[in-house]
Amino acid sequence: MSMEIGLMSKRVSFRLNTLQPLLGSFVVKAFAPFDLPVGSFTTMALMDANPGCSQIELARAAGFDKSALVAIVDKLEQRGLATRGRSPVDRRRNTLSLKPEGKKLMKEMFEVAHEVERPIRKELSPGELAQLFELLERAHRAMAAQAQK
Amino acid sequence: MSMEIGLMSKRVSFRLNTLQPLLGSFVVKAFAPFDLPVGSFTTMALMDANPGCSQIELARAAGFDKSALVAIVDKLEQRGLATRGRSPVDRRRNTLSLKPEGKKLMKEMFEVAHEVERPIRKELSPGELAQLFELLERAHRAMAAQAQK
DNA sequence: TATTGTTATACTCTATAACTATA
DNA sequence: TATAGTTATAGAGTATAACAATA
Image 1 (tube, rainbow over the protein chains, first blue to last red):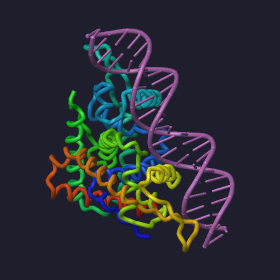
Image 2 (image 1 turned 60 degrees about the vertical axis):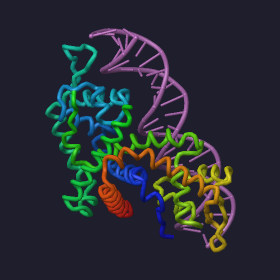
Image 3 (image 1 turned 45 degrees about the horizontal axis):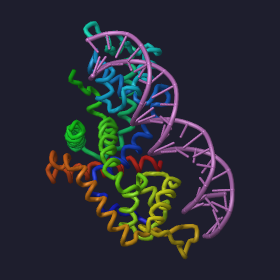
Image 4 (image 1 turned 90 degrees about the horizontal axis):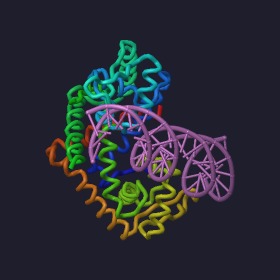
């Protein structure tokens, strides 16, 4: 039986709920050889883009809880990929930064993630993909603004 | 600190990983008064669009495991919203269908879901929203085809 | 031998609350 | 009194494997 999706075709969350776990399962498999906790790649990429940021800032940007970030940063430190310093101006805050080894590994993981998304890149033109990023980003900003109310 | 997302701006799964849980948390809260298992709305909508389909077909279309569907259909039957019949041509298969009460409730839930996504509709024009649906659907098809290899 | 629905179970993820140290 | 980081734990969600009925 060929299935129809009916009313769900007009619900953003339906598409997200089906595509996200599907894509996520591919990513998890592809990242398995790196032997790092889920979220490590995102964490490293955000550290790289925001050197010196705090854990709570990074957790918010990545969309997971501050408590979930602890084990990730622990592991990255153990593996010599990142460092956790203390902010001199506010000694409660850690200052996160990515070591050169971390940057190198992060870039390797980026290539792997890129490869996982290849079927999407084959289906969508560069312009369409850029459009998808833009629309998702604006949708996210709109919902995030709602969350703060 | 205003956070940058760096390389993640070029990763589809990053946007999905942040937007999906955010939107999902709003949906779960909004659906709480209905007191139905998560996935019930999707299940009812797919039953409505595919009367007589089997559980395994519905589970695949919805993106969750066949075992997860059992409790959902149990609850929908108990509440008098849906029926589980036996296929006369293949007695292993259940034939699912939505009762009028289920259709009515599903439409109510649709309105609630619609309301949850209002900030997105405010941010994106109808044309942009249609574009987003189309791009997500094509991305999903591309990844689903990959999964079967 | 394979598939559908079912059950039980294990596992992961996330959420929450409590604690410390700092502000 | 509030915030950043940490820890422990409970709850939810998901995945897996095994089983009965049927093909």
